[in-house]
Structures are given as structure tokens and as C-alpha cells.
Length: 145
Image (cartoon, rainbow, N blue to C red; front, top):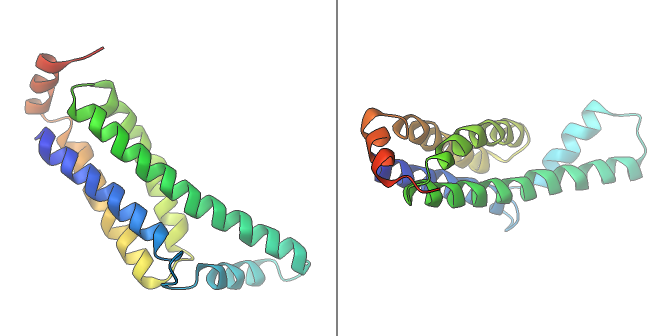
């Protein structure tokens, strides 16, 4: 069960990383999509303010996605090595991962959104697998401090 959970967490992290890299390599235009949303929702703001908001949103979405993917991989590796506390962190990490997916799918190009949504499913399944009875017994034998 733990190996399957680890593989699923790694797949989820990879999907998250791919979803934030796709706009960077020119697949879809995240900036144009953000500009359309910000321009529609805040039509009376100056161009400079809109540019700062768009740059900040891009940094949060891209940078946050990279940090979340790295955290998923790191804590999944810790979980696989026997650190039971990593399971709790991974479950808690699922909240910002799902929030990030929800925010990015609202402005992302279709391919990016699809990769991101598909990538959240393994994380949810992996969270369940980590707490099945077989996993609890494995952690009892391998618990590290």
C-alpha cells in the first residue's frame, strides 16, 4: 500500500509541476488569460495596477505550484522511508494543492487545467491509501523519529 501511495504522490507532484511548466514553455497563454479575468473584474483600474496584479498572480500560481510539487515529493519520500508524521503533513498539504488546482483551473489554458485536475486524483487516492490498516502496521514496524 505504501509503495502505491508513494507512486501516486509522485505522479500528483509531477502533474502539478507539468501544469505550471506548460504555460512557461508557451503552451497556452496564462498571462493573456489572467489579463482577461482581471480586466473583466476590475475595469476601472489603471494599466499599471493591472500589470502588477497579473505579475503577482502569475508568480503565486507558478511559484506556488512548484513549491507544492516539491513539498509533495519530499514528504512522500519521507513517508516511504518510515516517517509516519509525513502522512499527516501530506494530508494537510492536500488542502493547498486542491486550492491551487481550483485557482489555476479558473484561468489556465485547457491542457494545463486538464493535467492539473487529473493530477489531483492520485493525491486524493494516495491520502486514503496511507491510512489503511496495512499501512498503519507498516509504520508501526518502521517508525523513525
